Every structure is written in structure tokens, then in C-alpha cells.
Length: 336
Image (cartoon, rainbow, N blue to C red; front, side, top):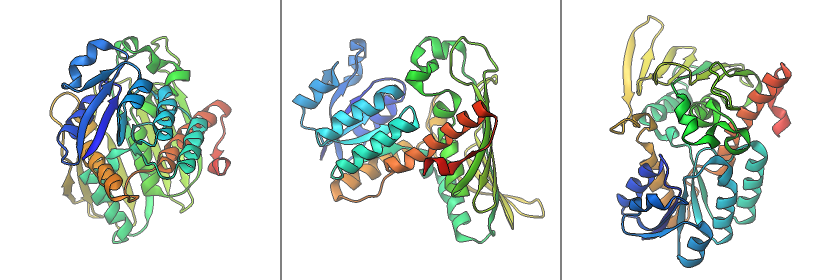
């Protein structure tokens, strides 16, 4: 039974706590947050307001890091140097440079595992979509489209100002709301040759980060990618991921995978499990990935999402920022 702790008791921590408490492979022994009013979430386990003290006093096998982006690197580093495995909420870090530092840390401590929470890779709809694409039964990929049209009010930033400050968040809609879609685009499209992108603030909330981003991807395979994300709509629309192939079109929308053939006939293929409540858009795959990671720790396997995988989305986000600032396409060779 793995001894597990959670650092950071914000919005997403509830999903982690539920997964830990529901796992036959783990026992929650401690939680940590600087806000002592969140101690009620401790579920009668040891509560700390200093993660360093927690690491000193507890004998831990895994720590879940559910903190603001700027704390991902230092807290993960502290855990890894104590030989404690880490389940790290997305994003990997706040930028590509910190991502590289985390990759070097993981290489230096290769006996410690760090899993990045890009759990939407394990959604039933996406697993089946990728299986079909990889099988070649519908021919090669011609295009990949990802759309994220959501709503975030000014209060979203006001209640947690770090979300709107670049040096703490590392970005806005791309790194917070649309990072899973960017990850899925690159998984389907393959190696990216170049990206042409543009970011904007369509709503003036007085913060630094973008609320809207658009990008065109050129893949080395010859496929074209289109990405659009915004938090300026009136509500959270369904995320859409579409893959155009030589012999069909696969679309994930409203958590359902459809295949549309050349005659325009639409067939439902797979449907995701969904969380109850207002945070349904998180999806239900946290639990799947968390338990997969626990098994990887217990069995000493590599069956989890590694830091190098998480770095790919950081490079894409960085390229879109660079392209927008310079008004030119960015070759992905600059990251190699």
C-alpha cells in the first residue's frame, strides 16, 4: 500500500483525493496547504502548511502536486530529491525553460518517477480515435482541428490573481483551459514542422495573460492542424477534436466520438465517462491515470505520462507566443 500525500487543496484536489481514497493501492496519510481553513479536506490525516516539513516528517511513496504553475518545479524538485514519486497536475511547469530543468531533474534521479496529468489521453473517446488513426483503416491523416470555446469571468482571476500574471501562470487559455487539446493534436498529427499563431485579449480584465489563441500547424507528414481557444464566450461549450482522414472523418464532441464517412453518414463509436457536478468537463480519466501511475510505482514500470511528454505541449505554447510576437511561423527545430 503506497503512502500518499497531496500538496495544494484547491479546485482540482477534490478529484485527486477521491481517486486516492478509492484506490486499493494507496493510502492518504497527509495533505498540505498554506490556507489552514482548508484543513477540513484533510479527512483526518496529518495536515501541514509547509511541504518541506511534510517531506521531513512523513514517509511517503508519492506526492500529488496540485499547486499554481510557478510552484510545480520547486515542489517537484523537493519531492524527487527526497526520493518521493510525484503525480504532477498539468501543466508540466510554467514555461519551456522550467520544463527543461524538470527533464534534467528526472534524468538525474532516474529511480524516481514523475507522472504529468495529461489524463485526457485516456478518455474512452480519444483512446478509440487514436486506435483507429494508428490502425490506418481510414488512411492517412490530412488534418486535425481542436476547438475550446469556454467562459471565464473576471472573478475567476480576481479570486486567484496568480492565474492572470505571466510570471506565475505562464499564460492564460492555452496553458490553463486548452492544454489537453494541444496535447491531443500533437499526438494525432505527429511531429510538427512549424507553427503560425496569434494570441489576444478580447476581454479587458486588467490581467496579463491571453484569453484567446489561434494557430495553424504544419506537420512533417503533410497534415494541417488548426487550433482555436477562447474563454470569452457566454458559457463552456463542448471541446471539439476532429481528424480528417483519406477515408473518413472522426470527431469528438460532447464527449462522444463519431465517424462520418464520405457519404456523410454519422456513426457513434465511443463515449466518455463523465464526472457529476459543475466540473464535469474535467472528465473521468484522472482516476484511470492515477491508478496506472500507482501500478507503475509498485511494479517499477514506465507505463505513465513522462515529463518529456509534458514538455511537448510547453513547446507548442511557447511557439504560439513567439509566432504572435514576431508575426512569423516558428520552426519547431528550435526546440530540438
